Amino acid sequence: MNSPVSRLRRTIFVGVAVFIALILALIVRRDQDAAGAEKVTVSDSVGGQSREQRITRAPADPWIPVPGYLAPVDFPPTGTRLTRVTDGQAFGTDERVYKHDYARRSAWNADGSLLLLIHPYPARLLDGVTYRLLGEHQTPADPLWSHSDPDLLFGIGRNRSLVRYSISSRQTTVVRNFPGYESLSIGGGEGVQSLDDRFVVLLGSRPGAVDLILYDFLEDEARIRTFVGFTGPGGDIDWAGVSPSGDHVVVKIDRGPANRGFDVYDRRTFSLKRRLFEGSEAHADMGFDDRGREVLVTTGTRNSAIFSARLDDGSTRLELPARVVTYNIHVSCRNFRRPGWCFVSTYSETSGFDAFLYRGIFGLKLDGSGTVVRYAPALFAQDPSDLAYERQPWAVPDPTGSRVLFSSDWGDGSPTAVVHTFVAEIP
Image (cartoon, rainbow, N blue to C red; front, side):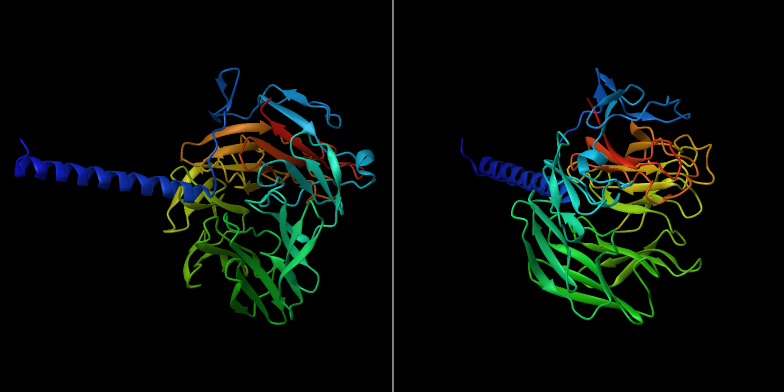
């Protein structure tokens, strides 16, 4: 019987169903927006055995000879395969340092098909899968791969300009000129653009001030916040960058022990929201935690443990205890298609040797569990005779977080040691 009560019940039922469907759609959209791209599922297992673990002691990694050029070597302790992807003879040079840009910058392009190494210059372009050398490129300074176009780089060109560079055509196109600065960089050499390729932060240095320039590619709009009396990059302002979502701008301040930390600004209003990790001068990167929340990942101010701090409200969470790591780390969240993880590499330091992963290249799950996946041993020379900075691994994952690229002197601390680049991946 089609009574008024029955019709009312059906109406209520349909209304509730539509409401639930809308909520689910919003949740899915939020997750997609947080990831910035289609998520991927990565297997962290070899032979059916999970590689995820909590570290309770220092790994007893054996020393192995440096792998030959493009001659993969299995490393059983981590269940990965290591490939040396650089070679002086193949690259046509006798330089000592062959490596990518930095831990905070992706070496792989958007789909993982190409790999860019910028040291030595001209940059070397490799096949992103076979690692075969494809050629040399006169890339712009501060080159950044687009997150969506596998052929596109952003960078800094001549005459203080923001430019695009096409790999296939080798053509540089000026996006916008920023005259009047002594120097111009993308975030001080450490910045990256938002995941939708819309926003990027530039630092323009001039006498007596540093301008933080937020550029909007879509609207061709540049907004400026001036820091009067500041120096930078690498000075009072160490670096600056926009968060993956584009909602936040983070400026790393270092004006001495009494004025250090990571200042978070609202991208829309340019108002200061908060300072994270007061007193810190540690390395850091921005990514997403296990719940899709934007976080800054770094070591503690007076504690070498790794923490994540939410950009929206400043709340922090312990991710890896101090007994596992010390201060000698770089963090990379370039795994934008695999949110919920960051990648960590360590380098030669004067203390902290008893930390379980004083030597390590590993993925860290950002869920507070302390779960890591080891990718490679950090076979660096302790207290090398020269090139201490260039010898640091600066590990960076590919967009899917399934492969990790890093540099190493392979334990040779002599003044003739060569720093090569390697890739660790699940075989």
